[in-house]
Length: 113
Image (cartoon, rainbow, N blue to C red; front, side, top):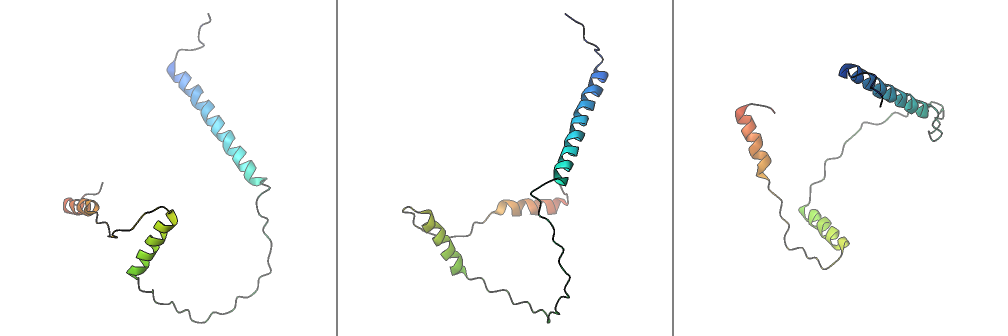
């Protein structure tokens, strides 16, 4: 049996860390090389710059009103697309007071996690 070269844990740690970082640096160079010679990268075509036409004043349309019947129709369509003999009995919004209570408690304590 042969004796180990060293039993000093600090020297072993330095050797191991050097090997790990050398491998990581080598991988980063390989990744950069692949990005430089990537054959699947789209070639940028130089387009002639054309002056952009002046746009008229931009008018944003008002947001459409949300129709609750639309939500019901979407849910019914999803259930029908799933298949089977499923039947919608009721559609109710889920009320979760847990997050509200935690927010109130944090506000009262005036602390941030």
